[in-house]
Length: 422
Image (cartoon, rainbow, N blue to C red):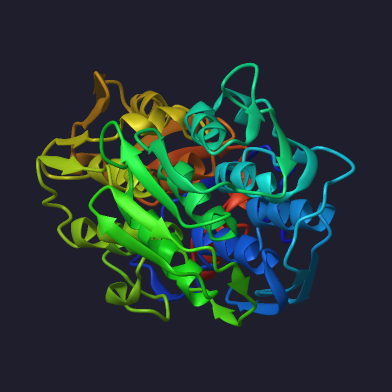
């Protein structure tokens, strides 16, 4: 790694470029799709080759956990995994330690029910504050022994190798990952399984569609019965070669950098080619500096930090709604965004219930407003606030190495576009 991407670097100051950012950047592979594909390949008998994959802290934790359960995960190059499995997961000798990786933790909590034995799914302190009880309740309704003392990790699963059958209800209001977790394990039911939503609608329905598409590629039969129900047949999975598209959440930072500086950044993939939900942010970024007064972030939650920082330079204020679930991400992102925007200039943002209101001010551009941005060990806070440093002097990002969770090369990408980092 270069110095700017070294995880031990305490702080990094961005020098606003005096020109438009022009160049080509290849975003990393999608974290969401990579972790889905790794699990599906591990559950498929044979060898699967995953190309265009993300290599980051989150995907490394998933790959390591699968290795603990008897799956061979090789890395022949910087963007590929070769996964070989007999189609089963073995009981690990030690707990599965998954850091603060939400996708890996939720997905594996359901999948390890297929293990014949005891499995502990755990994470670091931040993960131990992220709720998982709705998923455990759904698993118990299928006859699976799934417990947690706090409703958050660590989770204990006493698996029997069976995933049950029939109808399972899940409240997906806190996270669509609960629904995806059930769907991906469902092809190993003793019969067909119906996954049905209760409570309010999903926080990010598009991610369930990503799950279903990946499942079908690996040979599953999964159909949507109605708006709130999916039916999965007990087909298991078959090994396959799978190409992973670039990460749309990562792309939003580069699209926003382009918009802020009047530049032209070629990602090698047109905006319209992305299938991930966060790509919806592109439509709003193209409106800058005339973003709408209200933006519903419910279906593109990981893109909200990008849009919130962009909104600081908008012609008019922007209210973000439908984002309550941002409070249970890697950090409370609503509070973090408000706090750090106000660190740049008091009054720049405020919370109203679970809404975030950003007071747009194009006059911020060109000012020197020294601010040391706390990142809360959250990669998206670090990457989004770097955008403010493209227009405001004195922006320093603390713990810049936290971007390694999903985009280890982020700082090098900015350097490659000519941004000076100190």
